[in-house]
Amino acid sequence: MTAIKPLRADARRNRARILVAAEVVFVEKGPTASTDEVAERAGVAIGTVFRHFPTKKDLLQALVKDLMLRLTDEVTTLATEADPATALFDFFTRMVDQAAAKKTVVDLLAESGVDIHVAQPIQSLREAIGQLLTRAQHAGAVRTDVGLDEVLALLTSTSQGALHAGWDPTLQRRTLTILFDGLRPC
Image 1 (cartoon, rainbow, N blue to C red):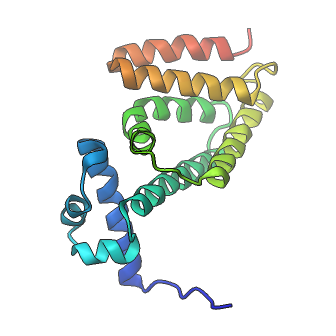
Image 2: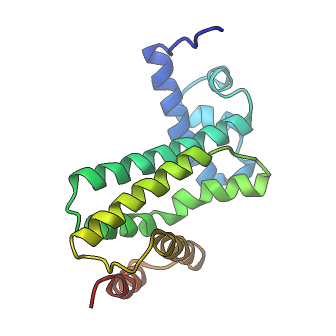
Image 3: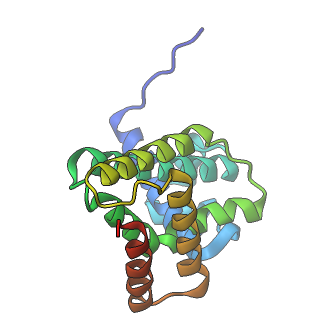
């Protein structure tokens, strides 16, 4: 079995720049965006993009995995470092604020028929959100009869509403206030 050789520092930086550029380009242009546009935005040659991601599908899959890992890291940090009484609500608010950017990339994959294999990153994110919920419940900030499935359903539906209905910040804030009041103990 051949060991996978770690990337050199410059290759790691290029890969990271490509993923950042891809997120912006695909959100702006949709699934028809080209890898040439990604290379230009990242400030690298197209060959550099293809060295890291041989196909557009590979790039999109890596992008979604990267987004899931970043979200999981964010939630894990909140679960270990933030105030347990507010961390779940803070994460929920940020997710709704960023719904368009985060969801658009996943929608792009569905539209373009790209099959992504992100079961493990999704499970890791689910577990991290579960930790936020448990900590919030132990802190007395969330009702004990609220389960992870309900939190995920509320997060998904609220993010979708913000994305597809184009909620302005005032509507987002008012909607989240009502939702959070429903999650808090009486």
